[in-house]
Amino acid sequence: MESIKTQLDKILLKVQRPARYVGGELNSVVKQHDKVDFRFAFCFPDTYEVGMSHLGMKILYSQLNEMDGVWCERVFAPESDMEKLMRENHIPLYGLESMDPIANFDMIGFTLQYEMSFTAVLNMLDLAGVPVRSENRDSLAPLVVAGGPCTCNPEPIADFIDLFMLGEGEEVLPELVNAYRKAKAEGLSKAEFLKIAAHIQGVYVPSLYEFSYNEDSTIKEITPHEGAPAVVTKRIIKDLDKVYFPKEFIVPFVEPVHDRSMVEVLRGCIRGCRFCQAGFIYRPFREKSPETLNKNGWDLTCSTGYDEISLSSLSTSDYSGLEELLDKMLVWTDKEQVNLSLPSLRVDNFSEKLLEQIAKVRKSGLTFAPEAGTQRMRDVINKNVTEEEVIRTCTTAFQGGYTAVKLYFMLGLPTETNEDLAGIVDLAQKVVDLYYALPNKPKGRGVTVSVSLAGFVPKPFTPFQFEPQATMAELQEKQKYLLSCVTSRKINVKYHDSKTSVLEGVFARGDRRLCSVLETAWRSGCNLDGWDNHFKYENWMQAFEACGVDPTFYANRTRSYDEVMPWDHLDYGVTKRFLIEENKKAHADAVTPHCRLKCSACGANKLSGGCNF
Image (cartoon, rainbow, N blue to C red; front, side, top):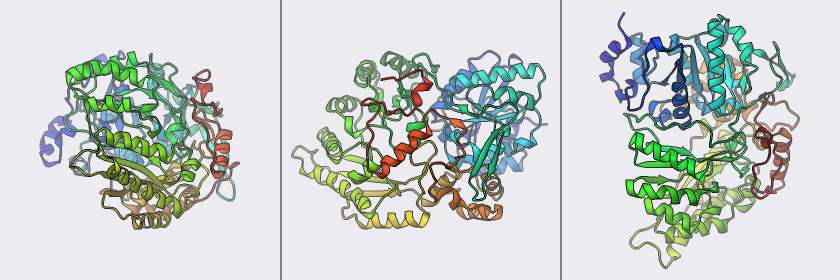
């Protein structure tokens, strides 16, 4: 039988970007088969370019490969041209490092970053020759596991995954791997191991939980079996200065979406924006020290040769040591001609000094996220940003030589009116007018204000988890109205497809009854749904109809405070009581101070042993 490598030699010149599929990049890890007793396939259910941009995958890949006897390999979803040739030539999905079929590995792990990647998970399992449903996989190997932000509500994909890891992976994944190796050595069955794994904090085994339903189709009860815990609590890393971080990253052959080194400055968020799932599920707020971050950045620059470092987090300008860190890093980044990138800047703490430090290294467009166009709407979502702060920040940027600003907003927020939509355009116009009113604006250049609009999707573990999502027709009407308000050519408006937003809303708050819809849609050809050129909306609607499931039940109705949510048996730190109180405050147009000003008793600090402020 021909090896996969030999088979690939015959087809790779027929596909776009063949370097996606060959491995062998700088800093990739290849081990001898007879030196390992555990093999892990780290699967990213999207293309190589997207997966190779993901920091979490880089961290866990390196960490697992530093464990004796463990070999972690990368696996990405092939594009349609490559998949077609793989199926025609009977080439199974393989690990990039060894070119071995992942069906022969001990564990196949998926990172679930986005609900629209769920069909790619099923497609990758099928392409590997692995039965997609957990109940049809009897042996211990390969065990199919998953982690990532979408595991905060894993129910819509629960029938296909043997276990989920909730929260941060640097501790729980090695612990799970070692428990598996022990079970393998003892000859335990899959069922026996899953009962053991269910008692590791942060591990959720869906087959050990039964859902019952009321007559109105809401959930009546979630019942654990076989001694599984009633509530599964996520894992967090308490001290980020002691957490594992690699000294080197793989340098890809094909340019990824984010082609640079990344260091993570903090986890969590102090802000409490009521629409933002990441801001709640990654709590409590924790920071790395400037010394640790400076060393992380230097190590990666030396090992990869990248000429750009991104200081990554949910809100980098909330990092308390940012100016100290920049002072330390600029000592050597200037000398080595390395750019510093600061995503996720806040308009309410963007100082002239920070601008000066950024401008020393790079001068491009700046991006800010007011999220809503009127102060009332910003109070509803608890954005805690005023129009004056937006104008002041743009003034600072323009006076510093910037001529392009991108502003992010959302459509379809709870209580939103046409006045709020018109306010988005009004704010953008004020930024344009501000530029031309400045006496010391950059000479000879005009200003560009880009307005980017995303449809609001209610997410689990947010105060808006109870809210209805706007229907597709409502979102399209809002887009149409907003565009009618634009009168200046200096304002560019872009918005996301409302069809994908609606489907994202269904799966974000769905339950296990969606598993049959997911499988039906995948079998009808749905895959890589996050990409416009792959998304098949009609197939999805046919899948809902074939399975007798109404998508509006999940996306477009208000949920009562006492309704049992599909994720109520999972504990991400923030209490349901707190989310209810925040929802009530939203409807009263009332704000909650951020964590540094006052602890709002969300509950997350119990995971780290007390308040961090």
